[in-house]
Length: 321
Image (cartoon, rainbow, N blue to C red; front, side):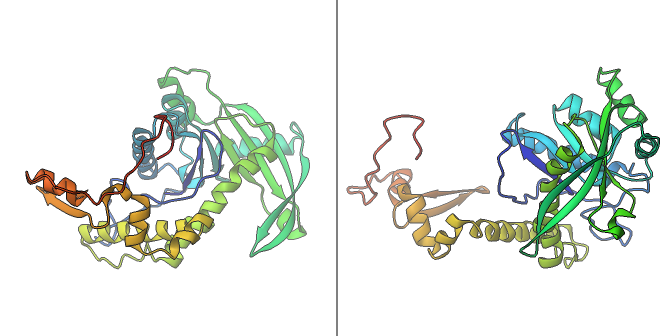
């Protein structure tokens, strides 16, 4: 899924990949398809439906305040989806807008007619460990209503006067980039200017490079080595994401310290209440980890002595454990 969620508190977070409720989708070759492309106008129902399902699951697990802004590429430039996010879930979206959309053409017409002004900005980006100065020009407009799919869906949600904010971004670092058509971003949130929206969209590029591209090119997630067996696809995808997440954690400073600790020692450090030799019980498809003392209690034979460490309870119920 090509989108990035920003936490309500605005703090940066480690990007982890979670395979949630993976489903079958038709593929042309009869195999298992994990993603599908959109039509030229981006109105495919499949990406929007998958996004809605994932958003609902995230909100169910993390709470209704988990996401404040959703960053997405052009594949998810879907009017009903943006209206659903804004007016049903309370989530703003900042989405890349394709050039063939009427809203893009309206924005370009406003700029060509000098009805909106361009402003010049400079920013620094790091590519391959080297800093590069980038010059951009931006222009923006608000109260845009030429996206019928969005306005109609918003009206069905009880907002008859819904509108969008959008901006054009022109890279003028070199003559070659300046000659290219400007890229556009559209949002249900009104930003201070186009440069602020560009800065807000930057985490999306980090997710693309460090997560999606890494999974596809480095971990071979889309190579479909599982053939046509859905269970094998689900298992391999889950294991790949677990391995990827583990590698992500070990890249942190705290993860580097844990990398030198074997799993048994790590468990003793992090779960001292289980003792030095816990037991794993599996009954009727359910599993649990118990200390040997707990296991004896379950079997009806209370232990005479305990080897569990004496863990002092914190004085405050809010104290970390």
